[in-house]
Length: 203
Image (cartoon, rainbow, N blue to C red; front, side, top):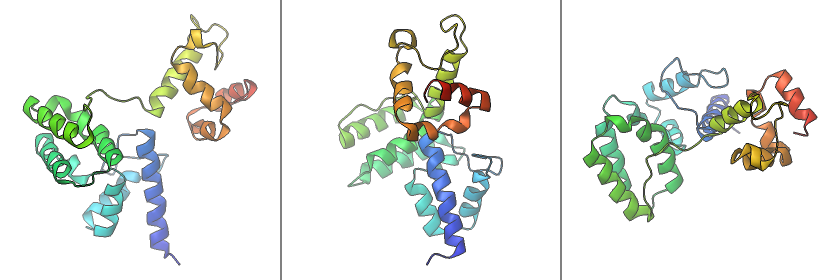
């Protein structure tokens, strides 16, 4: 049976995983909050207490405490070294760490180091490492709301329209209309009025 401490830790880890999947930029400081909970304080505490087991669990989700140092060039070198020596690299975890901690610091990195990572990435995963920011769920929600409130292209204020009018956004929105579970995961980003409108349109 799990102790209360373990239960609390697991709850924080689940919250952290949710934030990472949502594309939230993770910050290891007391100011960082997610879903009105002090997730940053949990991370700071784990780091300061040097709880090896907990830190391993946190890093397995994609957070690398070393990536929060003030020397992006140095930690990219460590990232490259880890990837190059990893015999069975977990691609998704490396992608998560790259998107959250390497890509945002691109402007601070040397071209030589970037090229070095590109070569290692190609060797390990057989594909080119792209340096463009991937769209997150929050990006999609923002685009969706922009469409809803754009009176020029959407004068009736609909949440879903034709593919021709919505463009690439249509497929993402349509999936959430068909799948109530996926829609429920993002409802917290809408106010009561918007939720009421969505329900009337079958979401």
